Length: 613
Figure (cartoon, rainbow, N blue to C red):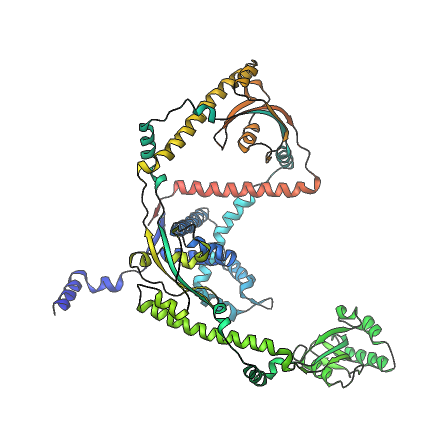
């Protein structure tokens, strides 16, 4: 009575209408005055996820096991929908429109709605129903999409590249440069550097997230596959014999026939085509060479090149009328009367026959036994799987009984994080379950995890290590090494900067180089994508000019050292081959168009009022 009273009071204060009339449609984002619904976002997300799964398979499934990646993936879909909405609004503001006739023409031309190359209304309604569209809703969707594409196509189609620009781009890409450079190791400078405890603590506080550990688990697991059960399955010869006799049709090959034909198509005059076929048949019966007559008269040009040969066929493969006539021929080299089919008029010659054959049991005994063993193993596998799933649920705090049913041992793994699972359990479904809140917090067994066809696994978290931030004393040595390397590189760079000043002043630096046992190294014809020298040196080299004040630069190398690189000579690239010019021009135009489109969307974003919920 008390509960009922509370329910009645809630209706009195809130009103029944608020429960009935409240909209279930919630917004994912608002773009100016238009909203993007959660349903639109979910539909776009599911479509894109399905496309990625079909294209990348297990590789994408492994990525989706990471919740952070899924969040980023979903955010990317929403950003795309916001861009589409902005483009749609811009198209409306510009007065772009699509007529009903254009929409109808586009729908009729869509291959999804065609059967045998023609628009099929039943297929159209079935596809829409499957996609969750009503015809009116789909026409509205097409109108919006086509209007938006008018603007996007205009943007993408407005960019172009001149032939001279593509030639210049090619020559710059093919350009090489001669260089000389010094590599200054940072390690010798570290001997004079001491890192203070305050510097270590300041670095720790400023970069504390670098010392967060990932959560880790070790798993106990039970694995079972059909292959595990096969060795214990026994099948007797009598069982195999009985199966053979009960399924004798599976070991019987159909009669095969090989024939040649001459085809005369109906063309515009069926009666004339039939008379031509009768005339050819007379020539065949008078001893004419069938193969030569096929080459001369047959409308089936492909088989005509081989004397009309159609290769081997069995019942059910050919046109019914053709097949009936071909199988009615009693002997090899017999020729049929003129036969009418949907393709035209045929004259058929039987060239060979392979009679129906039944493989003797002795020849297929091993195959039958293997098949029966697999079937028995699969039956036992599914029975065990069902029982293991029941026991895993009924006894959630151990896998021992599950392992007992499978007659295998419970296996365990070492501790691992979500991105470095050991190979024995490195399956997307297993990793996802291993780091789920249910298995970690409730300490229960997983449901059955299907790894593959006829291959399953049950897991539970044996040991769990939560994510944490390492204490300063745990990482002080690591930080000391980082700061020591940074300061050593800074000291090496300062020394290299002094060398650079001397080089630009054309002073002799040989004595300074001797103190560090450093010598100039030379490299000719360095390409933009060259690998003969460090990438940082290549990048710096192609930024330098041949002027004295800007022909050298100090750069930091990835390994912690520094380098002084000097431009010696610029080697101009060759002219673009005429066969490649058009392709490069198109590629540059496409790149420019994509950049323009992206900048246009960014400009619309800056001027728009966007709220993401």
